[in-house]
Length: 268
Length: 307
Image (cartoon, rainbow over all chains, first blue to last red; front, top):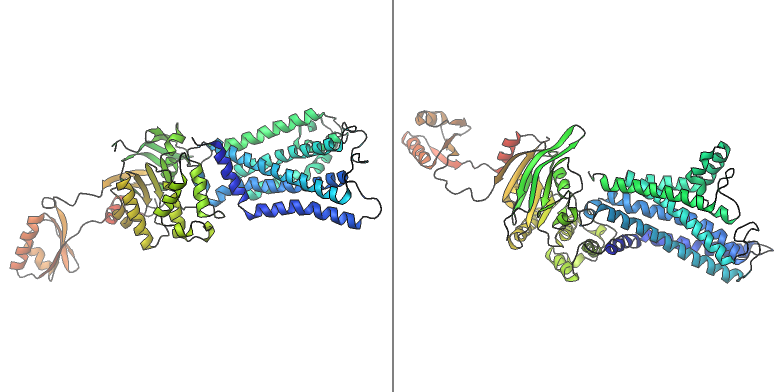
């Protein structure tokens, strides 16, 4: 057998040789620059510190990165079916599991790459415009478990939390993409999952039943722990509990993708 | 060259629900042989090919390629196969070269030299660094062949390879397949519904209809020993009715427009001709009606086009 890394290289080639990928990258770079510059020009009086602005922009960027990654996940699996190339891809000396795994890895690497770029751009542009503050006031809420920590720790933790939620949503999109072989449906439903989190959490709060703790939506808002809260309002949970719930959903989604992708016939 | 078959299909079946798409298909393809897989549309050709390359599962039976079962040893079996299943769909946003690199990486030991060699073989040198979306159908077909032979497979599977090719392209493909089977001992498995094309290309053909194997016949080396075999001959004559009378009940002639047909061996034909001429019947032509594969095909499939 050839080297498994070759499969990931192939998937990477199919992602980065597309112009659309670099247009997405353009958004990730330009949006924070534009926001910071506009803010600096039009805000009168008190200027925010670099960390506050960075956190705000990061929240917007993560929505974008999630959507972009879901699009790539859908292209990666369903796209091969629509293009018909799946027939050439699966008749190689590799198991379908390896092919699927290489696709998943390349998609997560894509998200990681975009997150790193987003971190670098938001950090740089805000330090350039607003200057670096070592002890920013108003960044970390007083009841946060990280209230005594450095702004670096707080921001990195926020990145990690949002990245974890992103991976779960992308896994969901990946599952739909391999189950329905339709990228439109996968992208649409994943964006619904991304955007309806708060709404559904609100509805669940009204339901007031113990099982709401196990519903996926609220736990995607991991950052609420950072600000001293908890994602399910009436049923306080711990950070570890939320991670465990996300892990279970992550495993289920992957199990479904894998089962469907490896077992189903590729016909017509 | 070993004479063990490259592919062996043993009682291969495919059922979807209660419908049987492929029914206990058994056949073998030998090294260096161009094997045609002939059947009307919907007879199960593509389904069989998809089972051979593992794209769909079998409901019964097994397929072995170079001794490895497609079911239980898929990577080993498929590593000996190169295939184009239906249209040669490549990554359109990549160049032809990048497509080949992509597929080369999925096999062991394909060097850059081998890629260049294959590009030259299919004659794509000039355009290989263009994006595939700019390729014509014929060029995509060539690229499809290139990806299929990169790893020097023992078995090349082509599903309707002449679809969309112009006559020159078809001829080129045919010559190329013949060379591949002769020089490298590659077995070629071609499906088609284009009968005349198969006649020119194949050593043997299997005919299937409604998922069942109807016949396997050889297309080479059967035109010898003609003197002893009975063949159907057409006599073109001026007065068929008079001619029939002259025959005095020999054979079982059928009157057709401007003549009659009769089944007879070589000597009898000469004899009949002499009788006709002596009886004053003008004989314009005597032609052997060699059945084309098309006639044979229509005969065994009962002339149906959709099974």
